[in-house]
Image 1 (cartoon, rainbow, N blue to C red):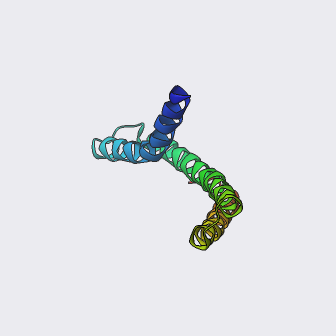
Image 2: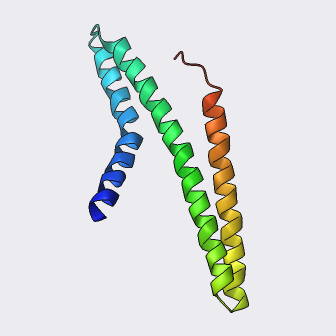
Amino acid sequence: MDTLVSVFSFLLIGIAVAPLLMLGLYVLASYFELKGAERVLDATFQLLKLQWFSGGLLNIVGGLASGALGVWMVVHFDPLLQRALGVLMVAFGLWRAARGVALLGAFSRTKDTP
């Protein structure tokens, strides 16, 4: 299980950082007037689309998980303060999931041309 968490962590870090590295590579290729600079820019655009899509999915999954944890808190804890925190956690989780859905909706309406 630790290996799976490590792999997903490195995958998400790679998805977050790769477009910036590719953009830096494009700037260098453009500065030296290399022929492949436009191809690097097209690859950067594809990586940004992947980053946007994975960010929306991560917000949906994280929001639903936060909401489920909040429901568990409301059901299993007795003090009123802890139940109130659980209700706030449910509201935050649903808000985060809604933001993820909105992000995926905006992603689906984008054009495929850079």
